[in-house]
Length: 376
Image (cartoon, rainbow, N blue to C red; front, side, top):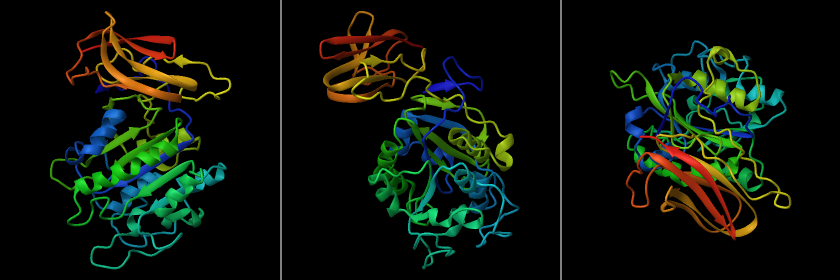
């Protein structure tokens, strides 16, 4: 993993303007418990792990969701439904997005119907609970944007993914209910997140986070948060302390809306962004190109982007200075944008030694090359 300090490293920029931000919230688990489940580990390796991320409060789930949605706890310390003091008229992501002429939707698994204000579904272990849906507590937004989870696939198929998306798995798929394990939640993520990432596109991100920890003594409400997408530095680690207010501030900056509540004074997460060209030129006018790898130099993962106009046979990889292949990254027929990600390992799975390497792509009869420096 690439460790990033609180100062902007070379090549980093502020929060980029994004077309789509997808936020997935899971439940009540310690950072150390979930970070190495199989699919979550893959997300960490491909994106940026915020290693010092914390829930705002351990009093209950509901106030943490309010903090992430509107930058305030609103004095709420419980999961009482409706939230005490609601409906609220304070600024929040939904109202701000609508006022900016952008779109949002929240997709909640087992929500009975669009805009339902039900507190929970039936049973002793209900699959839907309103405490995880903070938008239901506000009177200044369009509640028709509160949708059953099945509508997400429909919107993706119709190329109608909103600018801001919140995804709330049900209380088994988020590992909340008794008997619903972290591995079950990990499997849900593996089955659902790839389609979200693809729909978010080259200028979108997926944020995976938890509301709070498991209440373990000494854990300090330490949760896992991962940013993933083409705009995020591959295999990076952000070690600065952050909480839901910092994540909310980053979402606001990415979507071009004014931050609200305590997010207005929180620092955005600015040290994790790939500042190369992630746009996909039109096929008719785009030129064959290979971007410089980032971050460079690196102590672990780095990535470069290849653009192939039309369709062509591609063979791409990382090579040492003697011209020997270190790791094959792409092989076969490709068209358009191709992301070349290297985790700092050799073909046999061993770690490559520190030194100078080259990202090289052979596209038809043409060869492109970019220098990379690996540190250890």
